[in-house]
Length: 327
Image (cartoon, rainbow, N blue to C red; front, side, top):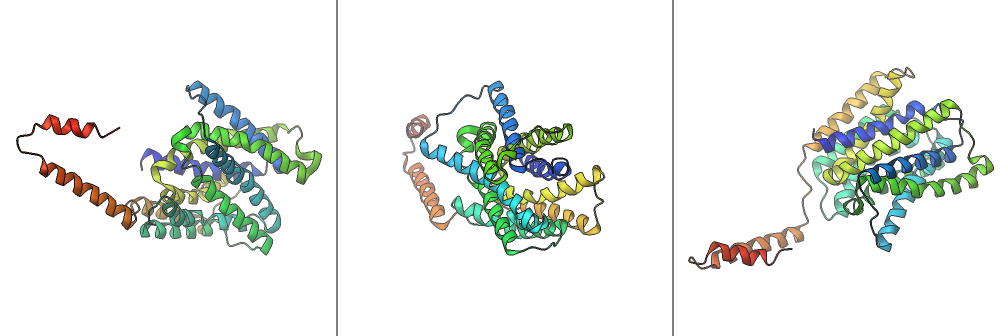
């Protein structure tokens, strides 16, 4: 497993550990707590960016709009959908629906980048989905919970797909910092609308520790690892690691003594790991036929130019002429 695969696995595993602290902050206002989490994460990430000499990047209006859309969908609306789905139908239903993220990214990711879904990655996504569902539990639901859960699924896809065009411009540290900072006012507005003046209060010592863990580990570290790995793995392969979320939840619950994994839990975790391994062995997604034909035409033109060069022409002249056409 290379460093990027390890980073994606670690990111999703850390996201799964939030289950260990969810009980600690259960009585704290939900939206206010999420706003505090992202505010603290943004301060830390901005400090890291400054320490690494990463200054401001001038973005175009369209890129700022994309950044805002990423923050609103991938962070704000995702949290709203998950919270409301859990309130409507319990935590199992959104967990199961979000377990389909690997398959969704395996199908949608290559299409949006001009490629074709890899059959092996799609098959691997199905294996991961089966494992995540088995580890999460069948559960029960209702129409409202299902709609909120589907909304969370769409937002989770946006968290990765909207980031891909921005990562080459600003990098994983600034992207994580800026999206976290942009999420804070939106979450406060949602909290005021839904919880009124009780959106914020002074946390207890235990709640402060839980919120700090969410900000430092689940947001700062996990976001950076995910966004560093995403462009190198591609959305389809990176999406397979979303199956590590229930695995992280199971392992953490066992370590802190909250619950003991059952045989079904262990079987689901094994399926997730097997599906990820299968997907990582897959070749890169195939390019569309039109794009492939263009590349073939360019290659043939280059070969014809080499053959057309006179035998006595100096090699340096050929190299110089080619250098003149490159950036």
